[in-house]
Amino acid sequence: MPTAVLFGRVWTDNSDKRDSTQLEKKGVEYITALTPLVSALAESQSTSIQGVSEPPESLASAVTRVSAVDAELGDELRTKERWADLKDKISKLPKVTGAVNILNAHVQASDLTLALYAAVRRNADLNRDPDGDISNLQQAVAVDMPSTVMGVNRMGDYANLLQGLPAASRAQVQAQFAYEVLTVQNSVKQLTENLQAAVDNTESDTLSGSLVSALDSFRRGVEAMNRGANPAGTPNAATMSTAQTTLQTALSNLAGITLREMDRLLDDRLDSLDYRRIEAVVMGALALLLVLGALTWPAFTRRREAEPAPERPSGVGESTRDVAPHRAGPGPVGPYGNPYDQAPGYGDLDPTRRERSGAVR
Image 1 (cartoon, helix red, strand yellow):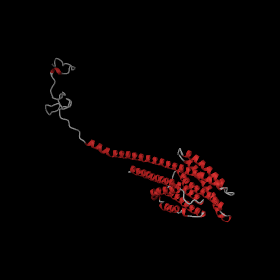
Image 2 (cartoon, one colour; image 1 turned 45 degrees about the horizontal axis):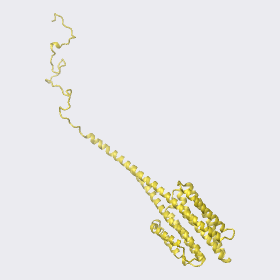
Image 3 (cartoon, one colour; image 1 turned 135 degrees about the vertical axis):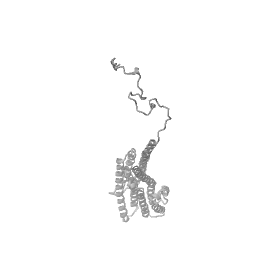
Image 4 (tube, one colour; image 1 turned 180 degrees about the vertical axis):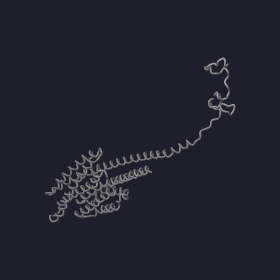
């Protein structure tokens, strides 16, 4: 019974961890599909403000991909309603007119996308992962990176709007632009810290090397974006536009690397859990065999002891010493020690005894 209880607890704990890890892998799969959608929405926002009525092809492709993933995982991750609402908002974007209205409509769609990221993190238990490296990576890829992409894109679009707006209407857009600059700076700081913490806490041999080059490219894009934003003066829209393209490419590459590393780390955890499961089964089977052996051995021993010894036929294998001498009668043994009670012969007397005197003879 104690062995069975211990085995049951080990098996249950292993199964719970396996289920949680597999759920996290599904969350990573969903976030992988969401990443192109963020970039596609940013591209759609910029081109629409510039007067392009048709949405980019990347947006339709990204929507199709997320729809496929949501159809497969939406019930388990509880994202179907959120994705249906977001998909409806995206489908109405081409009908919006006016630069400011177009920007506000895209901002709403982007905010819903961030909310969908948060729902996936929460429902897939990614935000409660026990390992430090995965915990920091999911924070970076599901919070900091999409927020940075959207903030950078809004910075560039607000800078373009400021150039065409009359002075009387620029105050509100200028305030929004300044807010996005601060938001991007905070997101970049959080992203860098989370990636550094993931590298410091990981046991992966590939995480550090994979992130170095991508993170350097991302930082260079941020620096170029800040130079174009020029918070102390008038933003340079051309510089920001170039930096925006470079930064989005770097972020897309960084997100891909981060998601692949997360998936690899989760696969390693599953392999370790599978090994522990096999180990538990082997040890449980061995313990069961030992218990069965301990229960059956006494019964087997008692059965051997209870079996009678086989009888041997008379006259077979008996020596002359084992056969009792036949007595002539029932009387006791005579005084001469002869079992037949016969006196010794005259010549058999003890020669050591002295001869009697002649008188006596």
